[in-house]
Image (tube, rainbow, N blue to C red; front, top):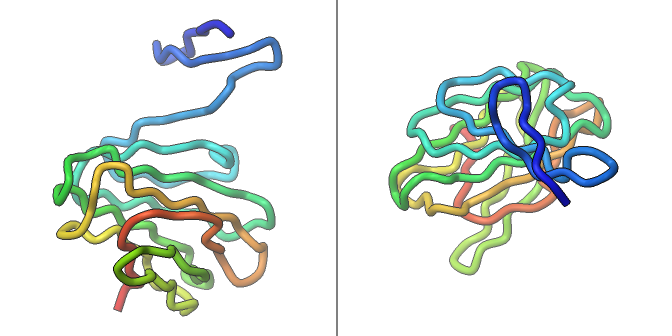
Length: 141
C-alpha cells in the first residue's frame, strides 16, 4: 500500500491495482454523475442537497455523515421519475423509503449522528435501492 496525490492535491490510499477506495468530501450542494459511481462521499456541512442522476442499473453511491451529532441535514434528491426504495434498519425504528417517485430521502438533522450512512444502487427503471444504512433517514412528505 502507498499514497498517491490526485490532481486536486488530495492524498488517497492505493495499491498495485489503483485507488483502494475513492472518497470525496462534499462541502456544497452537488450534482452527481454516473462517473461518480462507486465513490464514498463524506458530508460534514449542514443543509446540503446531493442530486442524483437518472437511475442506471448498477450505478451506486455511498454517503457518510461526517458532521457533529445533531448538526447535519443531508438530502438525497432523485430525478423526477425515480424513487428511493428499501429500509435502513435501526434499533429504535426502521427508516423505510416511500417508493414514491420524485421524493427526496433525508438524514434528519435532529437525529443525525456522526457516522450515519447510506449506500444506494440504481435499478435502471424505478430508481434507487437502499443496500445498507445506519441512522434515521426519512422520505420527503
